[in-house]
Image 1: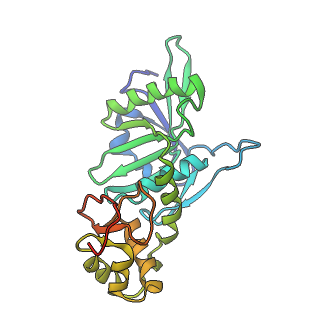
Image 2 (image 1 turned 120 degrees about the horizontal axis):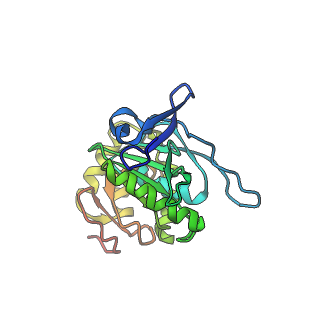
Length: 253
């Protein structure tokens, strides 16, 4: 078995749960990793506040396995990205030999598929040195394997605290039920066709108690936009999807 980048094997579970080993160079065309279950369970670490769980994806309409709070937060960003078509947790194990000829393996935490067919394998460390030397060495090997087939590998840096807080809160509105009655989303898009304060736009559509959940649903799906790097409040500016979203507060705007 060769462990050159093109020949490195990937191990995954097929749809009926059988273990399959595939030549890595053939992976982009042969395997729909976004549809695969985890090749192995996320470990449960005693004493850790957050353990493995499931994230309901608005992108796929299915649950995605997540191994930690850090990964759950990182899952939320691509789940609201309109350029993302698929997500999976731990779908493949990569094998290679180190400089001593010893076989090593690594299971990246997150797989993301994009509309152009490209893909990202990623790990979601809670801090830059998480996992120690083994994780950093594995990152180099996985990055080389991904580069060879035209994919990308990244160790995703922790998100800014404000953005992370928003991505924990907004998902409460990601389910289609929050779009509410027919025509409401269209009215919201018209109300925010130019940037204006959140409360003003919602009141222009109707009763804020009914309208705001649908606005937050539209924000999650990026049908309208604002700056999530600054705290949300009633006067934050919300604009159309094409707007850069400065997020600065304003008047009637």
